[in-house]
Every structure is written in structure tokens, then in C-alpha cells.
Amino acid sequence: MSIAIDIFSVVAICAGAAFFMAGSVGLLRFPDSLTRLHALTKADNLGLGLVVLGLLPQADSLLGGLKLVAVWLLVQLASATVAQLIAHALRRRGPGT
Amino acid sequence: MTEFLLGAAGFVLLTVAIGLVRILGGPGNVDRTMAAQLLGTGGIAALLLVAAATGVRGAEDVALGLALLAAFASVAFVNSAAPEVDRDTGRVNE
Image (cartoon, rainbow over all chains, first blue to last red; front, side):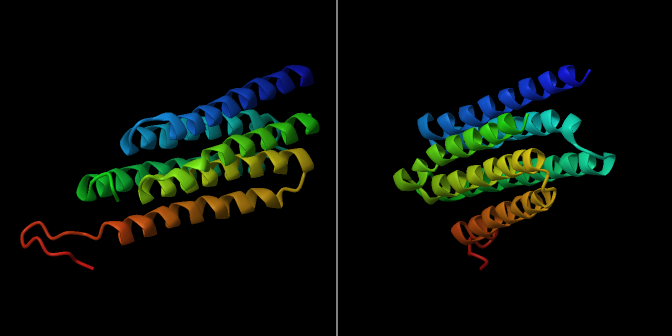
């Protein structure tokens, strides 16, 4: 059982790390600011979500697991808000901002 | 498991550090802010991985603090880069 849980963690964390890499590559390779905003706010949150999912079985208590989920939810909320704000600023000031 | 978690934390930090090249290249300040935001999210993931690997649960609280600060940094940037414009008068509200 413990091996199955470890394998689940390893797979989820590897997938999360792959999404972080996708986010970085997108930030470097995408042609303009709005597409780069996509790479940043979506791929990264999915990566963090998968890492948290992989760490959940490794948490030593229920409270520790809940805290991990709380971190993810806070980042999710903050990132969604920031994406809208940055896109709005880009629209107002043009891509040179 | 500990080695794997630490390795994953190092890998995430490495990819995020590569993304920071955007800060040098720009072209706009928005892109630089986004690279810093990427460091925020990646830093949180790395801290959570390190907390699980080493058993130092306090690192999770550091991750929470980092999440809060990264959000505030971007909001402050948006406020300073593009102040609210009054739609009726066209004047800038500082």
C-alpha cells in the first residue's frame, strides 16, 4: 500500500514539474505579453495543483493536508485576480507598459 | 522519497530561474512582473516540496507568506503602472 501511495506521489509531482517547465518555456517563447500571461497563470497553477496533490498522501496529519490545499486555493485565487488585473493594465496602456 | 522530493524542488527552482531570463529581456515591465510572479509560484511549490522532504513543517507557512507577497507585488505593480482612468472625464485618478 505504501509503495502504491509513493508511486502516486512521484507521478503527480513529476507531472507538476513538467507543467512548471511548460510555464517557463511559454514565458520565454510566446510572442506577446497576453499569450505569455496565459502561460504564466494557467500552466503554473496546474503545476502547483499537481505538486500539492502529490504531497497530500505524504502529509502527516489532516491539518497538514488541509494547509497544503489552503496554500493552493490562495495561490489560485491570487493568480486569477492578478491575471485579470495585468490583462486590464495591458489593454489600457498598450503592450509597451 | 526524500531524495526524490528534494530533486523535484531543485528542478522546479531551476525551470523558474530559467524563466527569469525574461526580466533581462523585457520588453515591457509587464513581462518582468510576470517573470517575478512565476518565481512566486515556483518558490511556493519548491518550499512545499522541501517541507515534505525534510519534515520542517514551518516551511509551509513560509510558502503561505510568499503566496500573499507575490499577489500584493502584482497588485502594487498594476496600480503604479496603469492608474485608474475616469471614463467620463478622461482624467487619471491617482
